[in-house]
Image (cartoon, rainbow, N blue to C red):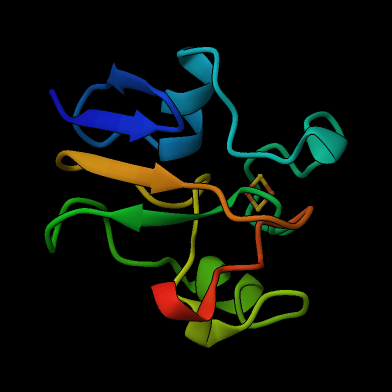
Length: 112
Ligand code: FES
């Protein structure tokens, strides 16, 4: 079972679980508090579940078409290296980081 480290907590999930679902099931959320309810609930359209995923190559699935589209639209930028937690599936151990901003879009330049 893959291990997910997020903020100060750790959880596990079944291989292939959507990251957003794994976090919510563990009582965590990839969303900023302002949009914890007002979001697209996993459709891949609001962009508020954006996170940085750290892990070895292949520890999450490749970006989906809707994920690439949403992360190329403001306030996101395609070159930020973020992932939509509702679109990527967990395949291995990862560390997840939520950056500042309602969309989690303010990834520090040093982290890019
Ligand atoms: S929950 Fe809206 S894009 Fe992921």
